[in-house]
Length: 374
Ligand SMILES: [Fe+2]
Ligand SMILES: [Fe+2]
Image (cartoon, rainbow, N blue to C red):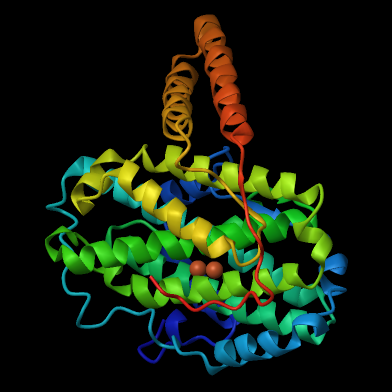
């Protein structure tokens, strides 16, 4: 790239951002891309859906809120933001504790894959659709996610690793989800993403000595993007009452349980990372679940009862089953296989227990509109 080359932070479309990243891809490392290629229950996946059904959504019932949200996204308050500047400073990768470095790089790769997964899905919707409202929204969201992924890749590149996003687009397996499952899963991942980023940001504001890497300074504007994306999905769901009532409430409960449980188990795989941040992962999970539940009351008629006496102990059971599952996989052979089955059964039973804890019901407000308040 020449000196005048544009940065992903300034790109105004996902296509432009990805072209910049393709140019950088020659420096990308195989190891990081291999990690991003993994498809397990706990790693970020790539999704595809019925794009025609999505394209057929009529946003007239939510037109007023829709236009406000789109106008705000078009104004692009974060253009140019996701780029290293003086506030970045020097990152001492060499001096970083090896356990922390490993977990942190894993965190960055997994975050980058998740951001990019959103980008790929949104960009595809924009490409396939003909509904002006829908394609505009998805183009704007793809723009943001491409910047986010590009910025994480900047951070990784300093550590000598980076994810080859072009390769991922071509080769990573795509999971098909019906549109309504995309709404539930993506809405939740945007809102929980907001809650995760803002909780870390506020914590590090109060305890700056724990800010072991500069990327956390960018989390506030970052989470505001995710917040808007969540708002958009809330409005999409609001166009059709059926999506959030009747039997679909059982699906909503399923996705809430799956998203919360995945976060809990995945975060507990990174003890050194949380210790460096000065964050107890149990406290963090509870904080993030509380915020996400509060936000999701804007559209979901139920929230999970995370104060129920069975909730926390069952999450811990699920987490231990996952640790044992991992060990069994590594052990291999017949004994490994038997242990794997046992651990899988315990994980499934823990998940079922979480799912069947009675949910809390409430009235959904007339308008979904929310502002980031944490
Ligand atoms: Fe993002
Ligand atoms: Fe997002």
